[in-house]
Image (cartoon, rainbow, N blue to C red):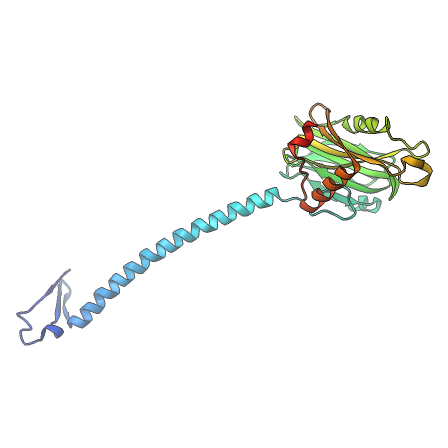
Length: 279
């Protein structure tokens, strides 16, 4: 197709109304200059709009992708909201009747899960493979199950009596497709018992949380909070422990421990300044 203006064919027309002639194998047609201008403006506008639309879509796609990535990161970093019935910052809380419902608590990466099963037992499963069946005969109430941020460790705690105890903690590590129980809770309990002990009832042990890198765990040991424990009644201390070698990095006073607990439950994560771990 060839477009051209033909002054010879339309000598009588004014400059404002000069016609545009289009010759093609299929024939020819004419239009006024104003119509031609509108046609070219329409073509330009269409091309401009298409380019603009491509730019808008490109920018929109960028922001959508950025939003999805940020959302995924937030979801991966998100932890359960603190349950007011739980001691730990982020754990699932159950009672004995929940074993019949057989709920599961998945690890953050979704690769492993702890399932409560009938008969008041626990089953740890990874990719449909059972890593272990755990049985604690003295489980009575206030069961808590939680995972470390890196999905390599889990804890199970419970009371063998009622609301005030006695409370026990079991800590496990999942490595090489195997489930291994840690002796660290026993080490912490023995350290506290050396200075604080209730002869008539014993002590309670709780697990608060892991640091974000899953390398340090925070335990709280407490003397049974009843009057028959005498002067030792309800005394407690916090213990920051290196979970690789069991080294107790620092023992925290009641005031310090209480502040750490409150911050952790509010934020959902344990934060221990590095200076605290060097003391």
